[in-house]
Length: 390
Image (tube, rainbow, N blue to C red; front, side):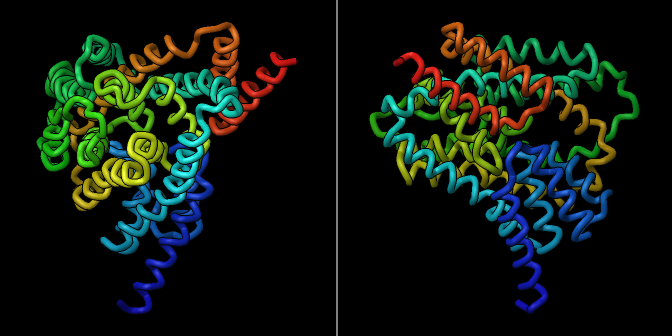
């Protein structure tokens, strides 16, 4: 390895490790910072190249900002740069989340911590609602989208597996949108879907065994590998899979534990998928955290490696665009079902309802950073517990 290659890998590592540390605020903020760093400041990419890979990440499963980091690393430093960029972006969030998981397991049920969590949980609902609102405005481009979203939501509410519902919504919606447009200049460039989705579809049909007393690590890893392989629609869709399967079907988590895990994901930097690290630790300690983290992030590395050379083909494919539109509305439908289920165990008193309403106004109307809302909710929960004791 020559000095130029070493220098490139080093600068990739420094940049994405820094972004992993300061990356509060969610994928939109991450991507904005990346654009400033790699287009404006360092000129590693042109703006057109950056937009091309941004569009491509929307056509594959996984967290958009993490996959953007992996794409940039691959373009700048080859397959080694791909690994370095992704790992350096993920590691800070995973490390911080693991520390919170240890604290939670050790102290989470003590009275000193419970008041904080009671104030955080209603805020988390408002944050999810904001994601639904924001994504819904861009996903529901026409009335036709409702004909995709409503059946997906209904089927999920009645018990259909979230991964299967998402993929069925994507494929059926893709053909529905093409047919409804009267096959207007159809494009046959289906290479991207044919390459990236069979693996996802296969894993979506894998059903883990019922919960044993001690969950095998391979089973925990397989679940998160499946989720990482079909997670269209951004990190918030992770909540739908966790609530539907880990809480509702396999009972590995309670709804309260899920809300706590989501809260931790909100006030730590980096990708929200680091929530998997927290959950893995809660279920199976350090080994569980490791396999859950590897399982959920590994597909992103593989998909980017496959997709990057195909980006020029994706720009002009009406079929891949229709599939993406259908998946986006299906993802919003799944999230709507989840927030209804979580609200039944969270909004149980007037204070919780008031906190959720205030947080929703602040995040939707005034775009307050979710990390500040979570911290504020925790403080209010603690303050109320002090006042009650007086």
